[in-house]
Image 1 (cartoon, protein in one colour):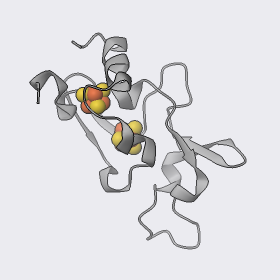
Image 2 (cartoon, rainbow, N blue to C red; image 1 turned 135 degrees about the vertical axis):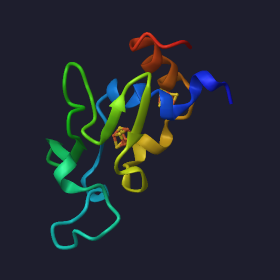
Image 3 (spheres, helix red, strand yellow; image 1 turned 90 degrees about the vertical axis):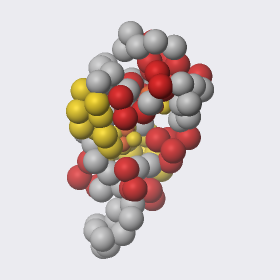
Image 4 (tube, protein in one colour; image 1 turned 120 degrees about the horizontal axis):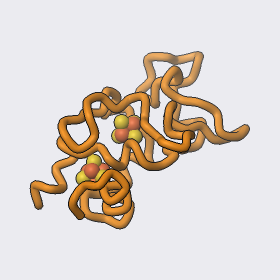
Length: 106
Ligand code: SF4
Ligand code: SF4
């Protein structure tokens, strides 16, 4: 893989878009030990949609992202991240758009 697309030195897609998903992907209040997205890191978008906290903003930045975009980053809920996060692939259209937004090489 092109080292320019090393996700652990990027994180642009976690700080570019609203990361929304169907509410069933989040942990239920009845079972906080489930493997769903931690409810405390989500915010409501509509009656059936949630998004990652911090991504429904003019300058999105997911609350689960640690580190500095373009330097060194990590997802603090990697194993529990929602489906949109699993769909972006290094080098795809979303990735390139996010990287461009942050002034990173594409
Ligand atoms: S924008 Fe691309 S390279 Fe950067 S973290 Fe997302 S998928 Fe990885
Ligand atoms: S949940 Fe993790 S992978 Fe998804 S946007 Fe937030 S920091 Fe990125």
